[in-house]
Length: 416
Image (tube, rainbow, N blue to C red; front, top):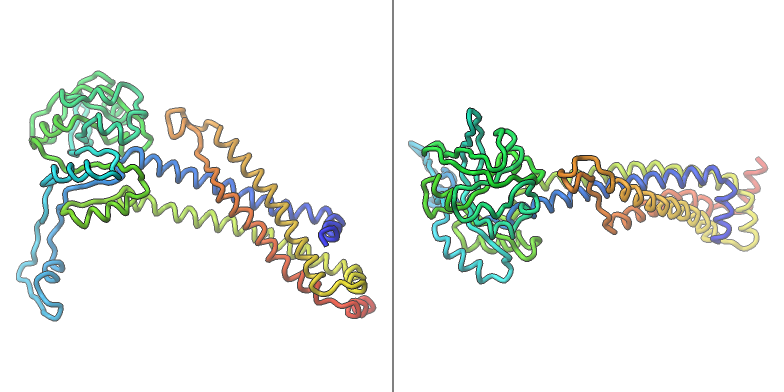
């Protein structure tokens, strides 16, 4: 049966080649698009994970609203009229009992490292140039274990921040906007105190504009001093042994805490939701391409069925039943899909490999300036299945029509 299917396809080489080429283009496009999209998604996730805490424990300060008070104090069938609606805040602007968190985190085997943090809005001044930014007070020796900021340093050493001494590390774009260089001095103020001189001991480039353009790091003691809040911390950054467990662990911790506990996925929910749109688009494009190839298979096999009526009559006469004829044409469709799919997978892999080695951006951007591509085995499995299944579906109707033909019907149609 397989031999006969090959003979039928080779009898129409041009048509066979065009169909295989259509499936080849569809599969290649799917692998290339999927490899790039998944590569970008993996790179962006890795960038977020490497440069942000897996879990952030933050001071919780929420607005008081009418609905919440009515729900807490009154039955649902009671009607409440307010002369003046409640307002204000509840909660705290700082973590009230940080030592309790430190003890818990020290005992938790799932915690890799943590550091208390204090984020403050500041104004940086150098000469007549002024820029606003956020400075993060951290323990640099713990922070460098939790993120890849140490590997992102373009000048200086992140650990030069030390425990105190008014030393600061900032993003390269922020440094450029200030017109400053490493080892220069800038004046830092929160707007409610006299400007304090800080020495720039290093600069970094992470590739994320919020961090490169508007962020700086300093020792937590120095940040507490310029904020005039000794011993105050507004958050605790935690890294886990397994970042994939962040959402589950954050939900568990939040049940026992008055503070807000969020995983990196929750903090970047809008950012990550764009991935679903990207995935939907690549599947739609790939399905459209393969649908066109599927229609080609349907048309070619329909023509072959019409042109091979005599051969079908001969096969039925020598003992082939309807199921055998149907199987013959289904095999032809599968051969077209498998051949086009395999060639497409190979071409897609080679193109992904080529483009992943081409330097498009400057070397200090993204992954040494090259486009990120994913070579996940799932891409190739899905691509092959899409090509094979679309070919099988497209060949079903012509195969079914061929299986229904009987020798007497074929003879009658030829005589008309």
